[in-house]
Image (cartoon, rainbow, N blue to C red):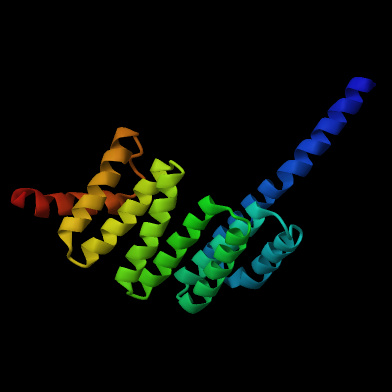
Length: 200
């Protein structure tokens, strides 16, 4: 009887603690469905807001909501609204002193700026994200940010800087067997290497 009691207690504690993580995943899943089924936007948003409102102080739920909503708005061309959401998310985590999560919102802001063709401002935001990921020793995330920076320099025909950032990202991802992360990145890398290497 005592054993059964402790098992019930354990599972109730486990699921109550894991609930916010499960709900943050649910929010991400609903946003994925939103991209696939835009005709169900109203019902899906209702479900997303229902989950979000159940956890007013959860960092993981707030992160899933702000980040995915901003990405959804970017991909649907609503960059002004995306900027407001990204700033809201940034301020929320700045107030929580959650510096590592701020990198995601610098990345989001950079995506918005790049979408609006403000490329040099986007690069500066990416560099802020990169500085945070480097500080917290997050080499995989740093490599992805470097890939994003390289793609912008590539678009600007600045092949020297594109090569520098793309090479750093490529070498880390290759050495850690993280192939297949971004086909676009590898295509750009080889084009950049082809343009730069002969002149080096």
